[in-house]
Image: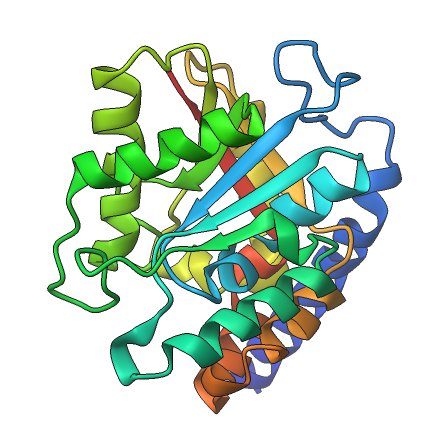
Length: 259
C-alpha cells in the first residue's frame, strides 16, 4: 500500500509539473532571457556542441526558446560522431534534427578534424577548439555563445573539452570578452532523471539572490525533443528513448552566465 501511494504521488507530481511547464511560458511572472535588457534586439547565437545528437538530448529548450523569438541560431558541432564509423550518417541526421528544431541546414556546421574525434579518452586540443570557434564568431558576427559547463551534463570528456575550449582559451587568451557566454548547468543524477519535476528546483535556484546570473528556460515545445532525437536513427535505441522522456533537459535548461 505504501509503495502504491509513493508511485501515485510521483505520477501526480509528474502531471502537475507538466501542466506547469505548459502554462509557464504564458504566465506573467516568467523570467525572460533578457540578456542585460537587450531582449528586443535579435541576437546572433552560436550553440557549440561536441557530437551530433547533443542538441536534441540536452539543448532543445534553449533552441526552441531562441528560435521562437526570432534570434539567429548557429550550431557548431565539433565532431561528426564517428566513434562507431557512422560519421557521415550522423552528420546527415544532425541536419534533419536541426530542421525539426527550426534551424536551417545552412546554419549548422559539422567539423571532422583528425584531432577532434569522438570517443571517451580522446583528448581535444583546447587551442584548436578556440580557433575554430573564433572563426565562426567572425564569420557570423556572433554576440552570444551557449555551450556545456565544465562537467558537460554526462561527464563526457569531449563535452568538457568544448567548455574549456570556450572558457579557458577563447575568453581568457583572446580579445573575445565582449561576447556573452552561457553554460548549461549539469544536474546531479536525481535531478537529471526527474523529468519535468525538476522545474520546481530549477525555478527556485534561479530566483535566489546570487552574484551569478542564471536563467531557467522552459521547453515551450517539448514534443520537438522527441521528434528531433528520433531523426538520429543510428542512435535512437531504447535507453536514449528513455533518456529523452525522463531527462530534465527535455523540459528545461538552466543556463549560467560565464563572467
